[in-house]
Image 1: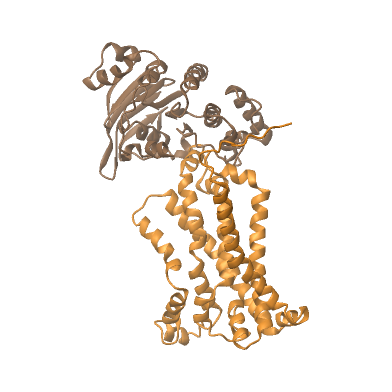
Image 2: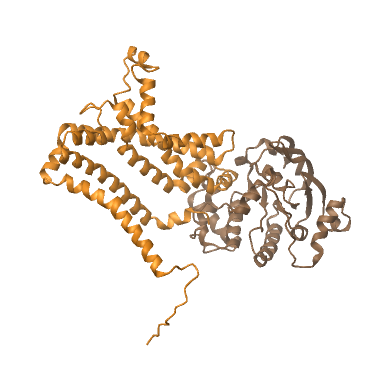
Length: 287
Length: 268
């Protein structure tokens, strides 16, 4: 029989069991209260009057138009921000130039400025009373209260995501491997595709997923430039608000659950990839 | 047919890293650039490898205008202090890299590359480890992968930046002898940077002692010991006479631009 010593020596970094339990309980309680409860509410409200009602709210033309608009916006904004994020972090991490810190600060602006303000900026520039308003009208170009404005606002709000994810990693990885590649005869192009990109692909993927989640969910900036034209310039978040204000709770929560589902799918996708490629991800960190 | 460096100078911002360095080394020689941190030795090595650019000066090697060749066309096998292995590639992938990136016309066939990798693995005594990732290797093994990778491109010269800097004393000694014997076999012109005078004197045919961006003396180890040209050389070499096995105290270094690389490595 094994004997269990009464006083098992604790590792110096090991806290008292009570402390551990308390901390864990706080964490779980917090997550339950602020993450799971709202999420559950969204789905339960959507299905409150039954499955059919929720489905009808989703296949109604305005809802479909909102879903389509959201997907189109994300499909334009996310790839553009991916290219921008890659270019910016590449420049910042691998080269020394004047104004580098200033550029890093600039990238953060959309995070620190209220989305409503960012939306207003676009109205001020492209709106009828704005700087370019008259010229745009003369040339019959619609930006504000149309798709281009929504896309612009979305790009502005989501552009730090990819860069923010990549910059610390790329700075940490340094430029040794790129130098090695060049000294072995690789061109700039093949250095990027064979060395740089494989080293950052996971961070890039996270950045893109986060960027996409935010692009589909953005409310403030888009709300200012959209003009809230039903079936035309309402994205999903805006459509949710319109329905909610009309006391159409089932419809509002049904569309909201689709948004929430998209976010959940994103999360699951990320976890699956992490689990599937755990070895490779571990090897990506500095050995 | 030799390596001729003619008054090469380089400034970082306003800090002079190299103040007009000239030297001549015969082809096939094993040369050490020895000096304290901030003496410009790494900068000189990086200029030779095409990873840094000289402000003025001229370098000729093998009848080539060396500085006019871009880094990727120099075929200078560079072994980095921290090896800089491609972490997402296997050992075999690392070694094959220089062959895989060649333009289609000059690229060997897949089978040929595979054969070449096997040969190199045997040469650096790592046969059987081709499928491992760098993170699964010891420091000494990584060092040898880095060397094999540099040798794969059939380099015109071999450049080693503190090749034993990150290894423990025992491995360092073994690898040192092995590297010397490898040099005897291959006969490649080799330049290596070190701050360890014992290492330089034991290994090299020719030692260039550098201080503050200038060469104090360049001579064979025997000559250096017998007649140090300047008080600095005498003093610097004098440090190592404390008996075998005593590792010299590394000169303290503010991270000056010339040694930015070393400083960056030190904090990792």
